[in-house]
Image 1 (tube, rainbow, N blue to C red):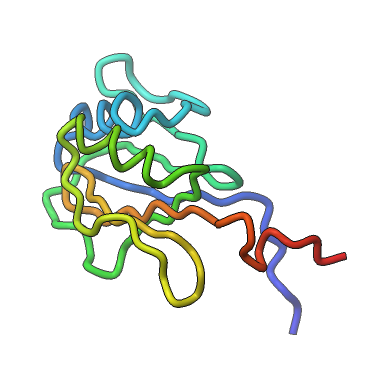
Image 2 (cartoon, one colour):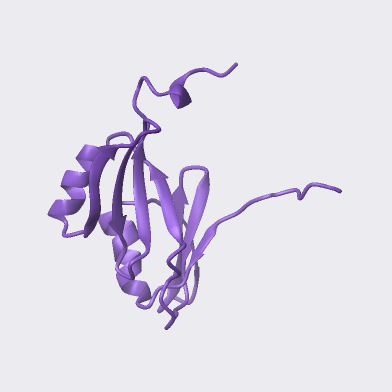
Length: 131
């Protein structure tokens, strides 16, 4: 069986209020915009997520699935916690070190999509050169 050749990918998010979600991801989280498309009145925005992309476009009346979560690695989870808390972002779970060694904090976007912010500590095996 042949393997799929993946040329690119992104997470597609169709929020209940597109403008509100654009403000959250662009202004509150501070994600950089990769591209903008569609009409000037209701554009779709594609945000950089490290090696991935998040497209926030269209509109949905359906609630997000409970199985959906966005994983974002940051340099300093505590710094992000303080910044986002001051901005009024709901913190589902405060930063804590997990048994597997990563520091994680859980927040949610305006539609309740769970976002985990992750910090890889300096002494964690993921930081070691695997060559």
